[in-house]
Length: 174
Image (cartoon, rainbow, N blue to C red; front, side, top):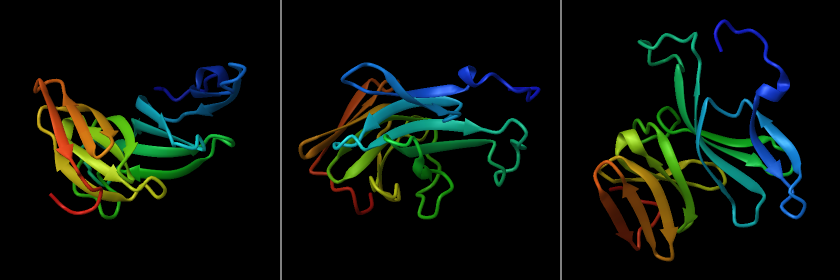
């Protein structure tokens, strides 16, 4: 926050990791992101995935090389809280272009799917490395991605649409 004063640690907490048997908070993730839009766990519970935005208010908005905003998917180790993988969907090597305002996350079909609302796409990521595998068009500002069985779904609220992608494999191009 401007003017970059220090904040008490309790005000920097973003995500609580909890023991589901006791309901006790076991760890806090600090400064995970400016805006956290979606969270999901790996099937085995060892990773927490977050779709979020990080920003640097000192960066020049007119200079695309400065990271004024990063639209990220981040994977955390649920035991240690360590960030184990990160993907800037607009800047990373292999990116299919800008993917902005990341929302709903869903694991299925061998991929982690994320809805990029402002870019009208669903992006498939490798669940381990977060490398981009595929993009599909989902017009209408998708906020939800859902993988069920052999189908990936997207809900595009502004377009009043539900998109169905049957038998969609995570690799390949569209």
